Length: 367
Length: 168
Image (cartoon, rainbow over all chains, first blue to last red; front, side):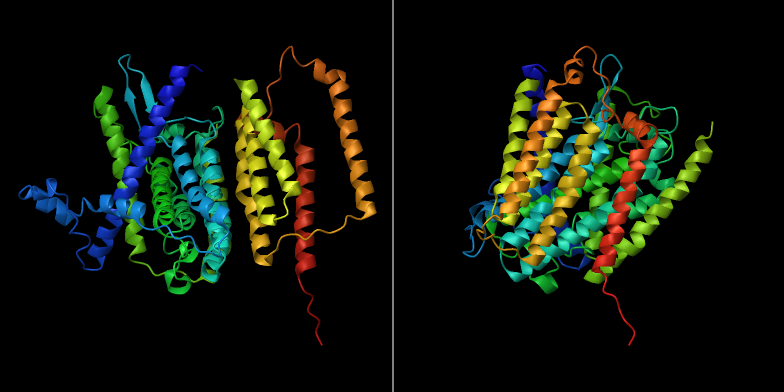
């Protein structure tokens, strides 16, 4: 590999991660606005900037929308006093927030987000690394995210964080199984007899172009996968690790300022990557409609690039809205209910789903 | 470049493996174990066995060590106190070490390892299709036996941990 290649790849990676971080900060704003909307409140509408905020009409509109709030929140996280309690294990207490953010940012490497056609008419996929084992890579790295929560709970050396950490580790291991099995039908369909074996996410999207989206004819897989994504990202109704009514705020009770900010950003980065994966696996990725691709609309060249990325981001935002909608609508499960759903309902259901689709795919693909 | 990465990750793997053995704090040992698995996964990547590398992280670093940590935390294991090593342990570990040295010498001095430089066969773990095909044809029997052993272990744990209720 040439040195310039490495430089270009690094620049791509930095751009993608910066965009992801930007999305994270505005996802926090969206969460606050949506929660206030659902609860009949106004939400953040006071933060303003000196010059832009004083433009007539536009500035006022932006301020009421809360557009400047993420900047204020970010500065607050940076400049607040960083309290490290005396009774903690310093090394793991500091390491835990980093460990919860890094896997989320690493998984974005294999997530494809669009394509464009270059001057020669070749299709170039927009993805940092198109691995042959992309989906396994994604599961593997995101399963490392549990260490952030577990170590935070343990290193805090106090009761509530500890309970949060224990709960999170049990929950994440339980739901990983059902999640892994629920996506198998998608890849069985992709790896029909006579094709080269692939687990690439780009190929999943391409297979859905000009055909039914996977969510439409595999509703069982879709449903199980979405429930597991909620559990894996520790979002309500599965936020056992936090559950503020019982555990103060669970694993990050002892954290403040920047370290808390890292946990916070990490949660939203996990949600964003999770939404992107749902869009890629089940909702047709960057294809605008079932049975239709952008090429069918006569869109080619760089315009196809813009529209495909736009479609992908639209689906991602739609699913993020669904995440937040669920959070502010449903109550939290009890812990024993979480375990029962995981082991006694979702796991058997996903295995049954796998068997059914094994037969369906066999009869559809029979030579 | 590849050689450099090999030495880097081999050092990481070995260093962390020593860390696992010599750590007094069980949580430190578990974290070193994760680093060891990550180092081994990197070595698999250098061998172009991407599937094995990912499975290594997914199964061992992502699930097995989480369970280790879970147990360590639930039992609240404190730092291990210095205890005297029994003579029998010394003898057993010395015999084990001697066997290991013998094995390494036997492998490196055999003719097989010298004769592979001409054309490398495609690694079974290189691509997913290859791996699956080999697993369900050539290595079918070992796989079934391994699965059976794991099943026995699982049933054994359930039997041992379940309290027998006696009707009285």
